[in-house]
Length: 144
Image 1 (cartoon, rainbow, N blue to C red):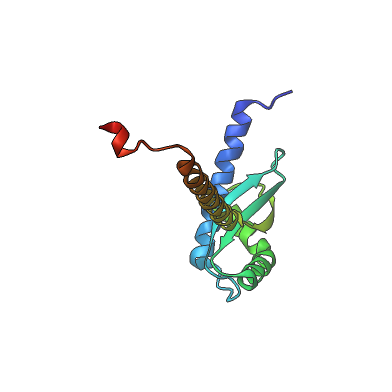
Image 2: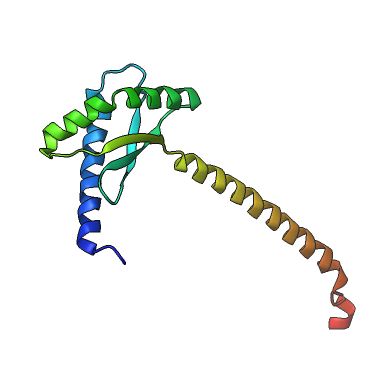
């Protein structure tokens, strides 16, 4: 049976609120030196509202991502308590954090597609150049 729209709308609103609050905490309230500049890209709330997955994009390499993820996991209790206090809700879902690599994947896919387009263009140009001498061009004597 499909889920009612009101429930989905409410879940999306709550997820958006969590995203804003956690993003504000990442910008300056969490003073852990292991947290590198990062932004919350998405919060996915489970249908029952008991758990939420927070996707975070970290500006840096693999080491910075691992460090930031470890710091966020250790600060999970503080984040939940702060959200409970700010939003005035009775229940804050169990948070799990994940690194969002979609931006890198998109960049890599664009790079590969660009290479493929260049290769196809070269093939087309080469085929056109090979096909051009096969068609006889009218000689100037025949035109006159």
